Image (tube, rainbow, N blue to C red; front, side, top):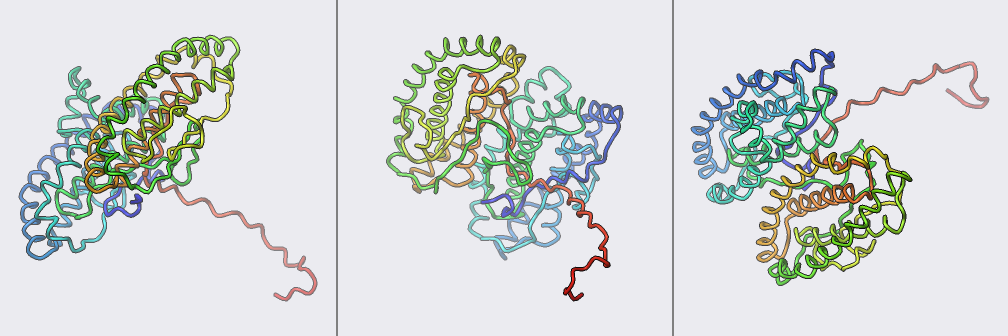
Length: 441
């Protein structure tokens, strides 16, 4: 399912961000947690009201197949308000949110489809059906969001904040927002995906829609932003899986795990030699570069297979053009010496994010194993999220192994970034005295 087909989706409007001076921006960033407290209190009160509204919605859907219009509007406004508040906390917007969850004024918005009929049997099974996406949303967005900001001002709170993807990205956005007016594309897109997935789960739980939450991310960047990263990935897969291969997927990985370990042992001296060469020459030696690049491709093939992003059993050489998950590493190119010298230190933030992503991917692999064994298919959202995780992990591994000095790109999530319309092209005034002969006007 594409992001634009979802009944609940998050849309970024960069043109709605109000420019601020440097001093004003830093002050608002440092005090963001305190400024958000009134909104967090209102969210708590509003959520208490939802506890009363949701059972009424459930009875209405079971009896009539539709939610009452006023209750649908109440729940939809709560979903929008929740995303706006956490978009503000996560530095996706500097503007202070309104307290009514109104639509059409904030830089980060939630587009919710019109009220429509719902299937009654999904309402009967809503609680058990909600468990898998709820567990994934806890890993991605975090549990107990209402205590995240007060806890962030303590040492224990900071450690807790790093226990989920959106929390780590929020902390990164707070730090970078002090020095730049907006978070990077990668952080903004991945944060938007996390909030969007949380909004889907929230809306599904409150019966705003009966469309099951879709966790998919894209491999390619959103329209209007071309990826310049040297490590790119493409996936050709229709989602079908062999039930027998799916059931024994983890046992089949044993020889690949052993070969990855042996190949990785050889990479230790190779990487050290490449590091020295880059420090003195400024560019890698091609044989060592090709050796490391092949390992990155092989790791990506095995990871895509293990997380059910692909169907075929991967080969053992990491050869280019032989697997549905295609990873291109480009040619050896000059690299920055300073980035080479401090490569391990610079990789720590990306490593933390990768660790948190693997927690989500472990749940995704378990869900894909169940779906592949029973249905013989992997849902597209699970497959796409797994493929995104493999691509980010491959970029991090390539960065560590000196295949590229480009930092891993956490973006290319299906955040619907709505760029401001371009200025109309200037049309020079027509010189009516210079008409070609024979042309009638």
